[in-house]
Amino acid sequence: MTSIIIDDEETARAILGKLCSDIQSLDVIEEFSNAMDAIKFLNKNEIDLIFLDIHMPDFTGFDFIQTLKSPPKIILTTSDKNFAIEAFEYDCIVDYLVKPLTMARFTKAVSKAEVFNVDIEPVEESTAGASPSSKAASQINVSAEKELFVNIDRRLIKIDISSIKLIEAKGDYILLKTDTQNYTVHSTLKKIVEKLPDAQFLKVHRSYVINTGKIIDIEDNSVLIGRDVIPVSRSNRPELMRRLNLL
Amino acid sequence: MLEQPSLSYIKELSGGDTEFELKIITVIKKEFPLEKAIYFKNLKEKKYKEVAEIVHKLKHKISILDLEKSYEVAIEYENNLNSCNTILKEEFESVLLNMTNFLNTI
Image (cartoon, rainbow over all chains, first blue to last red; front, side, top):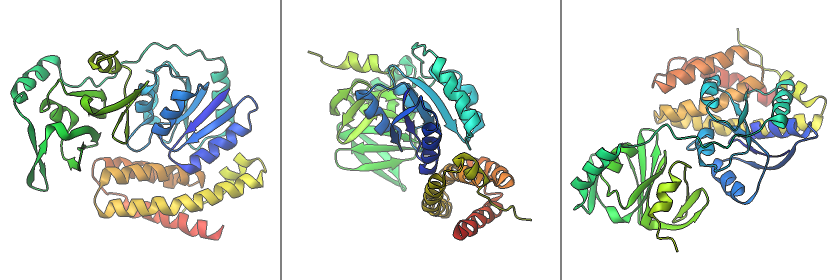
């Protein structure tokens, strides 16, 4: 089975690499320290199995799975037992390994992967964002607005809405990227979406809202905005495609 | 009494492959101080969510060095940090010191 390893911790990647090298049927093609690089790789390459860490900064293993159109078999690796229930919601997940990994448990997981068939039924995102009615209402309120004021260090900063490229959720904060500057604001994606024109902005992932007018290109399950490659969840992709003026 | 770190897990995993043992020890010795620095920086800045994240990451190395009780401390400390609570800070930092001292000897 061709496989890749995704883990932000080098020690974990080294251990997984060793365990994989001891199993003849496994061929590790690449290792990645972050999910975005793995997404780019998977857009161009097909593999059979992914060893995926759940707990990574900015982009969790589950976020990663949401972006895959046809996920291959996945074995989750984590130091946290608490995600086991969520893991069972994904048809592509073969097994769930708790670190530190042992050869016996690892071998068992790989054996399961060898006979496992992936059911490619799409998994819907649990976080659906604002309801259609509340979005429509907020759109009326802001339709004439061209500017947005955000509170940063007790100052209200004016931002030209059309200059906003994208907004990323970062815990209790949002990172607002404009053509000229980035702002970190204490708010949520849901709140800011209500203040932005619906026709111009779209939530493409549970952690990202983009200005569709700023898209440079779209590659399968990601969009390029400026230098940022933004993941697109399968559940949000149809709406994104609907909005494009396709030839 | 402080738990004593060991290389039993690494040795069991290696199955006698000394090249791998050396590789993993080198990686840990390189990665651990960086993670420790991130831990102290975020703690100083009271970024508790980020502190919890790095404690989570350090947990793996704690378990690799066979520190079972310290691992339990780290789990509880991570949970505390997620509630912006630093109870167990001293205990956790003594675990880090214990690991640092051990890694300096190998």
